[in-house]
Structures are given as structure tokens and as C-alpha cells.
Amino acid sequence: MSSVMGLLEERERAARQRVEALQAELREAEAAWERFMIARETVGLVLAESCGGNEVPPVVAAGEPSTRTDTAVPGSVVPVWRDGLEDSALAPDYRRLVDVLAGGSEPGGEAMDCRQLAVALGLEAVPAKVEGVRSKAKRLVARGWLAEEHPGMFSAVARRVSAP
Image (tube, rainbow, N blue to C red):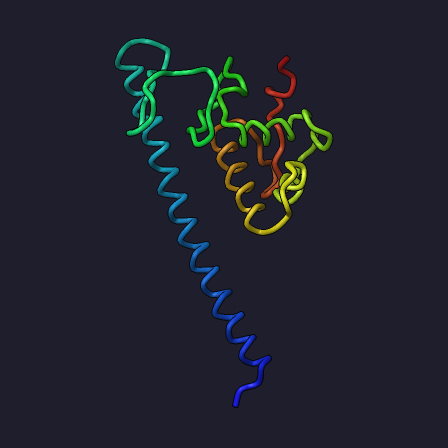
């Protein structure tokens, strides 16, 4: 007969393997999602260039409203940063991340890791929340809203901090 501790260790090992498999699947799904978002943005830029205008026409995904607004809603795509683009173009969660790192919150103004960011945003410093913050921060870095000078250390982009 197996010991209780042996059974618990076996179940813990099985749960850990399942979590690792799910995390790998999540990373793959996020990578695919990123590729689709980049493709959609690229198509929008190509269409804008072919139209001869400087303004990017709105690219609407199925099920989204076709009217363009100045403020983002939760679940909207993170736009690539460019001169004149305000923080209001970001969804609220992303805006809060940029705000914390830009100094709009107590801990702002210095580079922070994802655990520190999660705490500054009022989230528990548990792996699920920290990974969510990491995903958002990486997306903001890829789009030019934040900087990642050292792996895992995020900060506001200098050109944005000095802006009024």
C-alpha cells in the first residue's frame, strides 16, 4: 500500500505537468494571436499607403463596431505608438501599466519587474497575475509604448515621459 505522502507527491507531479502543458499551449496561442494582430495592422498600413493618405484606415475585425473612436475599450488591439498618439488609445489595463511606469502612480519612474508591476496595479503577486502582466508589458514593448532595457525589467519610454 502506498503512503499518503507518496500519493500526494504523485498527484502534485501530475498537476505540475498539466500546468506546464497548459502554459506551453497558452504561449503558442498568444503567439498565434500576436501574428494575427500584426498581420491586421500591416494590412491597415498597406491599405493606407495604397490610398495615398497618411491616416491608417480602421481595420475592423468580425463582430466589432465599424465606428472609430479616440478611446480604446477592453479587448481592443494595442496600436503601435507614434507621435501624437495619446494613452487613451490603449485599453484600460494597458493604460494603467503605462501610467504606473511613467510615474502616474507612487512606484513609477523606475524600471520594474512583472511582480512589482502586478503589486503596483493592486493585483496579487501570484503566477497567473504576474504572467498576465508580463504578457501585457511585452505587448506594450513590441508596440513601442514601453522599454525593456534588461530582460524582465520594464520602464517608460523616455520620449513619452517628457511629454506633457
